[in-house]
Length: 290
Picture (cartoon, helix red, strand yellow):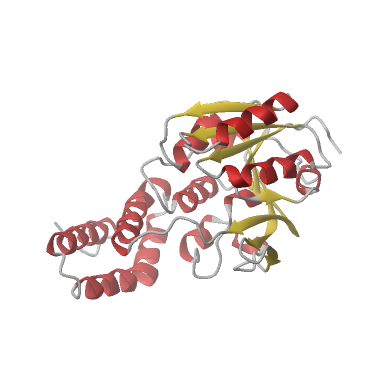
């Protein structure tokens, strides 16, 4: 195995200090040791900084970056600005890796640009403190832009922590800081616009935590977030026929259902906003004219 491959781990933190030790310990336990970790404190008001600084003192591979609160995408992008490795691992501070994640991923690497190594995942129930099966079955045939666009959330989705991304892909695309939801989906679409070489390891090598205290959104926020992500698609997917297929076959029904739902909500301004944005999307795919 080539131990010259350096992995940069980006860990954004916002008021989840209770999980940070477990996250970092999963890095310390890796059987592959050529890594660095960039801990990005996104304006936390708990004791995240104390824990991060303590780890930084213990291990020179750990770097601490503090910033004002800007959201998950902003924190990840600040982390990207501080990497020195060849491949990048994103890891939210409430999740954790299994000890052979890096070693088995690095064994698959045979080029250092335009490359992705994806492993399978499990979930961790924070209430019962048990490992549970993933919400979907990952298959290697899904790792292309067409399936990521058409089948996302319906058939599968890929937690961002499953992958090692070559540095060039991460630096080229970054995360859209305007999005507060669906930012991972847009990032995956951008990466696979480039048709990267992809290796898939059909083995559970990480877990993401399902927490009852996780962020929940009201219905209005989720509608708005979805529409913002839809408006980004034209910028990240160059195949216009694929975009038209997506909107016609997958989203038009959903959007019309949303309109019917809002008819029961006495928020006239919100309904007008939704109708305006849906009409905008319809124009993008050539169904509605100006």
